[in-house]
Length: 410
Figure 1 (cartoon, rainbow, N blue to C red):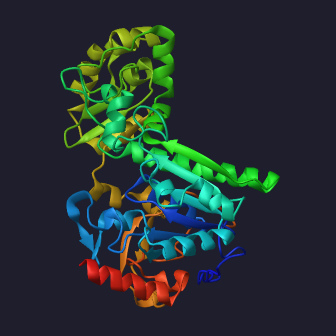
Figure 2 (cartoon, helix red, strand yellow):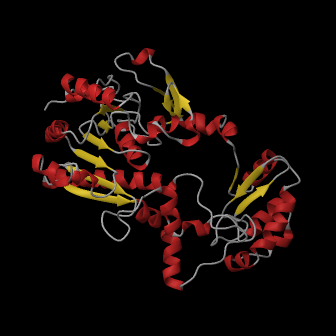
Figure 3 (cartoon, helix red, strand yellow):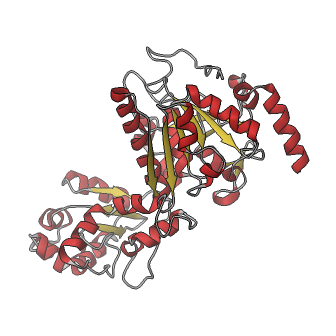
C-alpha cells in the first residue's frame, strides 16, 4: 500500500532532515513512546501515529488537565511532527491495511503491555512476515517477560522499585519520588538509541530485529554510579539532614537560601569557596574525606553567609572566583534567561494544521536540544488532531468506516 510523502517545505540542503528516509508506524501512548517517536520526527522521520477512534489516552488526561487550542497540553508536548490515523485495531480489515503499510515502513514502535500487540495480530512476527527488514521496538514497564511483566507499568512505580526514591530529600523525610517523569523520559531516550542502533545494523546486514526497553531497567541505568558503589561496598551513605543534594557528595554541594531566593553550589573545593566568601573556617577542609565528614557543619557556615545578600550579587562574586554556581530559577525567570533565548529552545508549533499551516493556531513548547549543522531538527508537521490523516494514509474508505464506528460507539 502506498503512503503519501509528507509535505515538507524545502529549507537547507537536506530538507527532510537526517532521518527523512525513515517511516515509523507509531502505536504508542502517554509519554515514553510518544517522546521517542517525536524525537525521530523532529529529525525528519515520517511518523504515522495510530490511535483509538477517540484518540490515545493523553488526549484525555494530562498534567493539570490544561488545554490549548482544544488539545490536552500533555498530548501537545510529545506529539508534534506526526500524522494521526484513528482506527479500530481489532478490525481485521484495518489490521490487514496496517500490515500492508509495513511493507514500505522501517520501524514499528509500541508501548502496550507485553502480549497485547501479539493478540491483535500486530506482533513482531506478523510484521516481519511482511517485511523482514522491519525494526520492531517495544517499550514496557518491567520487561517483556519475567515475574512483573504483566503488572501495570508507570513512572513512579519504576522509580520506587528501582531504589531511586532513597536518594531524594533529607534524612527526616520518607522516600520521595523525583517530581518529573524521569523514568518515562529516560526510557524514551533509550528507545531512540535502540531504534537507531537497529537501523545501523540493518544498513550493514539487511537484517531487521526486535528491540526492547523498559522503565524499570532504564531507571536502574540512571543509577550506574550509585549501584556500582553499593555492589562494591554493600551499603550507601545515609541521606544528609540538610539539603545537600545527594547522599554521596561532599560539602559545599547543595542548595542555599539567599536574601531574595536560592542558589546552588556544585563541586567546589572548600579552600576556594572559603576565599570567595571570606570564610577561613571552611578553608581547612581541604580533602574530599574532610569535606564529606564535616559536610553539614560546612553547610551551616556557608548557608549563614549566603543569607546576607541577594542571589545576583552572590552569583557575580562566586563566578569571579570560578565557583561552580547557578541561580535556582522558577519558570518565570527561566523564560527571561538570556542563554535560553540564545539557544533557541522554545518553538512555536501549529496544532491541527492540515494543509493550511500558515493559518493554524500555535502553542509554544520546548523544542529539540539537538543541534546539527546540515540537518537541523525542526517543526515539519503540526501536532495532529485525532484521525486528521486517516484518509491520507489508510484510504478514504477506512476514514469513513472509522467515523461510522466512532459515531456508533458514542
